[in-house]
Picture (tube, rainbow, N blue to C red):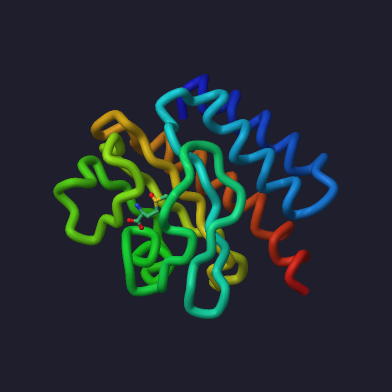
Length: 155
Ligand code: SME
C-alpha cells in the first residue's frame, strides 16, 4: 500500500473502534476513505438483506441503485463470487449497472465474516483504471474491521 493508503487505514481503523455502533462505523468509513483518497468519487456500503444488496451509508451523488439483486451488477457478482472485483473501464463490462455517466472505474469488496457475505464496500471513480492492488488491500482490511461490527448489529 502507498503512504496515502496507510494513512487512510489508520484513520479508518481508529474511527471504527471508536464508533458507538455499526451505523456510526459505516458512516465513518464512507466519510474518511474519500477524504484520504481523492480518486474515490463515490464511496458506499451495501448490506445484504436475504438475496438483495441494499444501499447503506454513502458519500457522493445519490445512486438509482438502492436495491441490487444478487445476480445483478458488479456488486451482485462480487457478493455471489465472494471476491473483490476491480473494473478498469466500467463501460466495457456488461455486468456494470450505471450510477453516474461520469463513472469510469469501480472496485467492489465483500464484507465477510466466517465465509458469509454481510455486505460490500463499493467505490466508483471518474478516472479510468483508478484502483489497483493498494486499494484492494486497503479495502479488504477495512472490510475485515467492519465485519464484526455489522455482525454484532444483526444479532
Ligand atoms: N455500479 C454498481 C452499481 C452500484 S453504483 O455504482 C453506486 C454495479 O454495477 O453493481
